[in-house]
Image 1 (tube, rainbow, N blue to C red):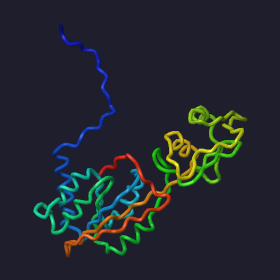
Image 2: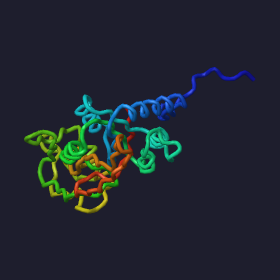
Image 3: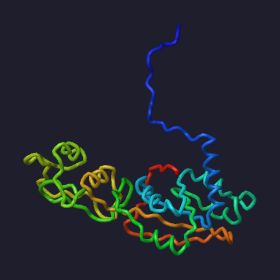
Image 4: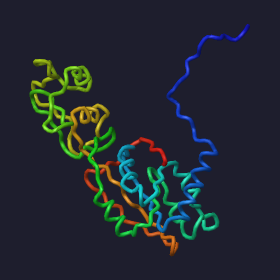
Length: 246
């Protein structure tokens, strides 16, 4: 029996894997930058959103080169043993590559880099799995969204979504309205997907995106200096976004 020529459903949810050539090209780029710059920094991000890393890239575009991609590929580019390392001492940094980390190459002095990243922070929306950094309560009355200043009433077409997420709203003159106050979350407790979505819809940014510098490799000496990890109350701690390496 001949094979059917009817159209087949093709899933668009799968992401194509990087080819061997693409991985090799990225390794080559990393190694070229090892040769070019005085310092290599290993940094870590929490619940990262691409927009924030793009901001960092933009602000450092004239004085640094940033990579954020597959950790195994970056580690292999550096070399994970003294015999394989691309430059003296850098294998010690390769062994620290775990989780959501990236590399930044620059000629800026360490004091300048650490001071800049200590000051850099971006308010953001919490995600499911984050711990609430503060208790958030919606007062009785119109449900407001805090995406602008001053806040504005939630549009009428959002009312079905609000009810789906657990709010007992009713329409009052075209505005979703609460008859009694509703607590979205308690400080210190893990957020559910519904709670995180409610915080986002109402414009409540409860976490702060930061870049944590983990270590620095010095091309002149081959030394790798580790930096202490400083936890702050409103740091993002988990996430699953993939950022493309530049």
